[in-house]
Length: 219
Image (cartoon, rainbow, N blue to C red; front, side, top):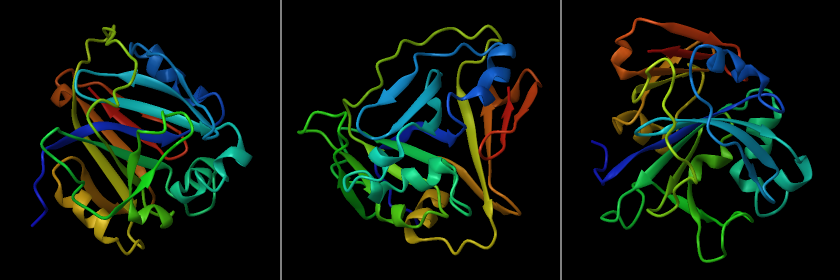
């Protein structure tokens, strides 16, 4: 049984090419883009789409040297966003509540250059396994600087996130926990992909994107 601690899905990231041109069909489909972000000193940047309960981040590698620094390289972001063959292009961020003092899996403390020195992100020990999605945890108070714009197509809430991972992966303890957590659905398939459902798919609309790993949106 999974360890039960108060937590929720904060965001999911997907690797895209520099500048994120792959997300333009989302804008054309009526999704309102939020503020972009540059992760100072981490060597990455992103475009974001915010919803009532979580957000989607489309990230790319801006500076390979920064991503390969001793501080950042243990995250595997350089490999995941840099297109290393066999590396996962997906990341899952889980938010801890004030009642949860520790993440439910083994983690290490990541202090990215863009955060004040007293703050840190807890990264799952499986970060060294580049074939798996990056799993990390945010403490309360590390909220993105973002308002919640209304989406022209009426989408509001992320109701389901599904990960399809190559069946050849032998899952780590951290990935097994994620699969049992109820936060995302994890399935096996031929290739990696991300599925995001909005509002239970009530509108019956569908969009597929050819990002670093394929993305399927349903709303």
